[in-house]
Image (cartoon, rainbow, N blue to C red; front, side, top):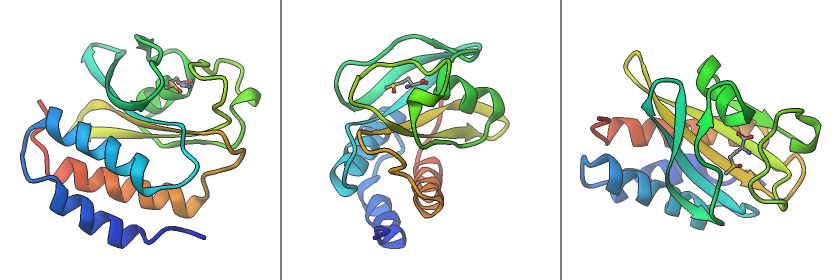
Amino acid sequence: MTPDYPLLARQLEALLDTRDWLTNSAQTCAFVMQSLPNLNWVGFYLQRQPEVLSLGPFQGKPACHPIPFSKGVCGAAARTRTTQRVADVHAVADHIACDVDSRAELVVPVLAGETLWGVLDLDSPQEARFSAADQAGIEQLVAVFVARTDLV
Ligand code: SME
């Protein structure tokens, strides 16, 4: 069953009561991890130098850092600025395996105007965990994060 994403978006709006990117990104990944079933990792990667993703606030096991734009599912999301929804990461040749439990992955780009600020990465141990409805819902949550945050 698809979670009630409009309700989750309203709850996240209420939670993000600072404009601070660090506080809001930490709260957002904790909120997503607590609110959605069957996830093993949720976190932000930030573009803090050109074409490289640096590990930001996350929930889950210690993760890979840094990730160049040229590599992996996160790199593809950053490079193309489009959401990457992968049913089985084992089928992606340049997937970067941080946690052997990860099977499905959803990576949403986070844009500050024209600039790629970073990505939000969700991993699941369940194959094909993310439906098109999940993708739309999580993109909606990222839109709330962007609207509520000063991305510097
Ligand atoms: N699997 C990702 C790397 C990040 S971790 O999953 C936390 C990728 O291929 O980009």
